[in-house]
Length: 416
Image (cartoon, rainbow, N blue to C red):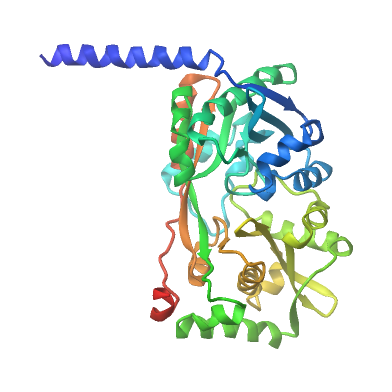
């Protein structure tokens, strides 16, 4: 009886595999416009799909990115049509990923055996990837759907876009794998059809998100909502900064400070455990100009010297604590980084946002601000089917920090 059940199970798996193979190798019925620059896309169609979506999908940002893009990655764009109607905008990047750029040990880090094995296997990896999303930001900044369309019905079209671009890229080099980043649980639920196209899902580190309460009209309101020890800690951080002769202020013009900002960014970026790409030296000033009032740069300054900065981007109802940099020698004697995190909270409130996305690193101090983890997943697919499982296992083996749980707010604030 068991043998018969096993045979039926195997037959069902083979039939499912054959059905998926046929689906991957036939058109979805959508039509596409694909280009290498954002200005090659129909501006009206692109704007209609992205105006209320991610700021990193809007033309003003993408032009600034193209003008200051590092050599790695290279952009690609697509519009998806159902008949004559544009139903999705897609921004992608082609990047060469070397294992040595993905796996850097921190000086005080002693990897376990599994971590050493993963590093050994991955260090020789060098592959060309097509990424649906933005490697210079976290979150889903690769796809915008028409508001009256069902995302679940459109993800097969996104898979076809990726397939078409990969095929076209054979002229300039084999594209080894495709990656779709970074989907929240809600977004991921709409994209489960990607599994039929041999994509594998992998959970990544969570985004730490602070919910901005309606009663917080200013940073002082936020401080007033904190429980005693957390409020004292925030005030002590500010006292240490001012006691060291520093001021905290917003920069209105980044261009004169571009070189110093890049130097501060590099001092932090070089210590990161994962760094697939590096910013162009004029990237932040260019993005600041492009985004205007939706971009803030707050600095810690001592006399004429900038000791640290944090950028905050308004992304619809959300704020993103974007790039940060600081002088490491100065940070040994004063809490520059912690002050910058608090500055981003102040910026998010003044921008009228409902939440602040703080990213995936330094989970402890972000939890101390009141941020909670938002799970994220990526989808990936290698051109060699047998490697799909291997890559998923390798990425899954990279250690993730467990996000701490903190409740820094007063009970009355929690109930509000």
